[in-house]
Image (cartoon, rainbow, N blue to C red; front, side):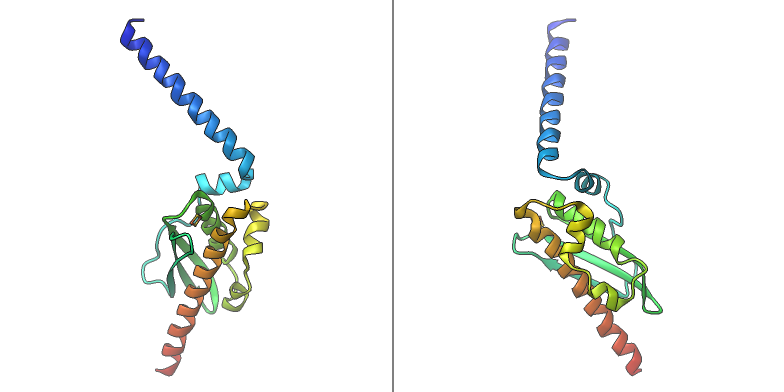
Length: 154
Ligand code: FES
């Protein structure tokens, strides 16, 4: 092994060490479920011509967008995008799963504590991330309801 190769392997080892330390710290702060949802989120993206849509910016300055597809009053699909933290990605993933198969009224009843219960809790400083997901969902539901009324008027 020449000097350059040794330096590369030292660097690889350093990077691996840092990654391991970060993972260990994350596991001390977040539940396994939160990390799984944050690293492999479901329902990321947008729906073409959504029946309900909203984009909300939370108190931290991060934004979430939720799209809904509603068929006969039942939510059949939901997608989200966020530029927020890992916890907000986990919350978006969970909330877009929770709404599936629910009526619009049932979806309005989803609260941040429902997301927290799926995730097994979040640190105090991340509770607002679950609230952002719920606020965005409710705004998307309101958008759907306002469009639904317009259709009924015609
Ligand atoms: Fe902004 Fe989590 S959504 S810190």
